[in-house]
Length: 224
Image (cartoon, rainbow, N blue to C red; front, side, top):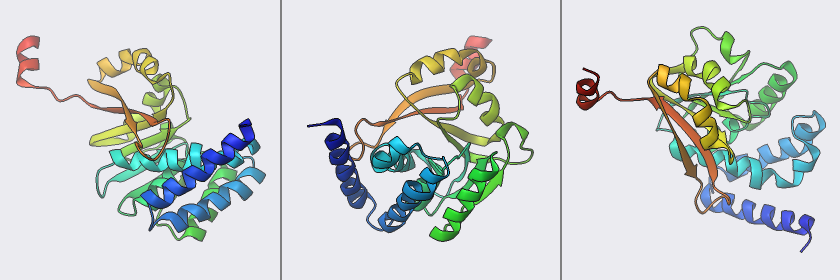
C-alpha cells in the first residue's frame, strides 16, 4: 500500500467514524470540510498537503475535544486560524457558547464567512489573547498556537474562576508541562496530559488540561 493509498483509506475511515459518532451534526461537519478543502486551501489557511487528511488529522481530532468540555460552558478558542478546534467543537456541541479569537484579518474574514454559511451561533473577535480586557470563559482552547510556557501567559488571564485551559498538543506534551513548571507553581496551577477520542481517532488526541489546584486541609497543614 502506497502512502497516498493509505491516506485515502484513513480518510475514508475517518468519515465513517464521524458519521457514526455525530450523525446529527455530520452534515454541518461535511459542509465545514468543503470550506477547508476549497477556500481554506486557496487562502493559505490549510496547507495543500493537508487537503486529503482533513477528517483524520483536523476535524475529528478537534471535535473529540468535546469529551472534556462541561455542558453549557463558555469557550474561547485562541488563535483559531481556520476554526480548529472551535468550529468542529461548536458543530458537535451546540450547547456551548464559543468565541473564536484570531488576530489576522484574512482569517477572521474566513471564519465569519464559514459561520454565516453554517448558521452557527459562534462569535468571532479579532485580536490577540494578551490584549484582551474583560474577555473570559470557563474553557480556553488552543491548537498549534505556541509552546505551553508562552501559551499560559497569553491564555490563563482569559480563564474564568473555576475554569481551565484545554490545549491540543502532540508527543511533547509532558515535556511542555515540565518546561512550564515555574509558571504553574507560581500560580498554583495543575497540568495533566489527557487522551481523548477512543474509537474515533487513532492516534488519540492529546490534550494538556490546566486548572487551578484545589487547596486541601492537608495542604494547609503542611504549609503551616
